Image (tube, rainbow, N blue to C red; front, top):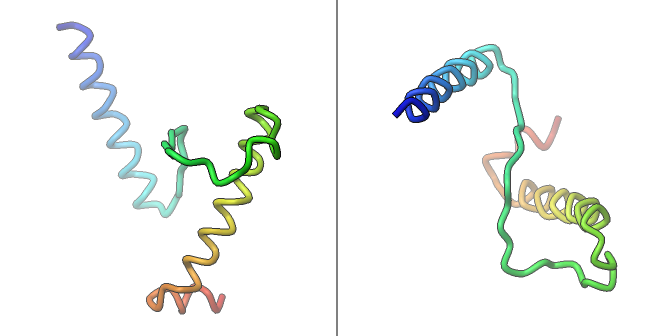
Amino acid sequence: MLMVSVCIIRLRWYEKMTVNDMKQGKLRMEDFTVFMPFIPIDKKDYGNNPDLLRAQMFNHFEDVISNELQQIPEMKEFQER
């Protein structure tokens, strides 16, 4: 029961901190996990090295996201900046 109480208090603190940051216009990125059933990079290209795979995935995500932004009409204003 004590552990549950501590977790709830911690979550409330984190929520207040996040709301405060959003009001100030600060963006934050915390550790997170992405599950991908299929990795779009051939295993021989990264040699089963997780650091090399991570670097290649960052480039892949940047390419995919930048192409997605170009296809969203509502984002046209931001693309021109």
